[in-house]
Image (cartoon, rainbow, N blue to C red):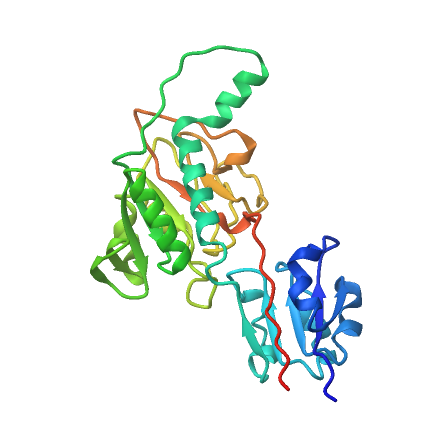
Length: 304
């Protein structure tokens, strides 16, 4: 009699709901573990489900994956598990492609509106019980350059077009008449397109080719503003910022950033980005840090 498959579920002290895991638990033995117990949970496991998709624990526990056939990560990106031993193994690695497209597109639109309407400023005024008339920007007619033309980039493009923005893309190969982007520029020609963009959305997957795609020269090619801010090299999916002008050190990786007049790049969540109608600058949005409230679970079937 064949045994049920064993599924190890790696979590970061927040477990997937019973409802989410019910189809799996009805057909498999489920082992929940945090990173400290991963090696033990992997012993004899057929499947590893990375509910903690930001984990760095898998390479150190890989020696215990003696029966592993399938690794599934609850994220669109698979870079946390693309270490040499996993690449060289026969383990099937899958991601949650398509699950987060709409949620991330909504997040990007929300950030663009937050920039244009200075929503952090509105919240500060509300908290201080202050009424103040202010002018804000329209996003209709503004240009958005989406770096990364996969499913997430396409969902972003469709939503921004619906909001009246002029959208184009940057991908591996150039093409015209794309149904979502219109014009797509090849990645090597990205710097030549940056000066025309009001908003740059970075949703390219983290690979050897996209690592450090955004660096000082990239930001220098964007639409200029008064004053200057220099940025350290960044990954397209995990940006970091640095201000050499002010002498401050590296800041934590933000969810989205903006470069404004006489200011260093700041995270929108800090409420320090200010709008300038007279001298627009390019706003850069990377939703890598956003975790939409959507999850997925692997589907298990008994073979025999």
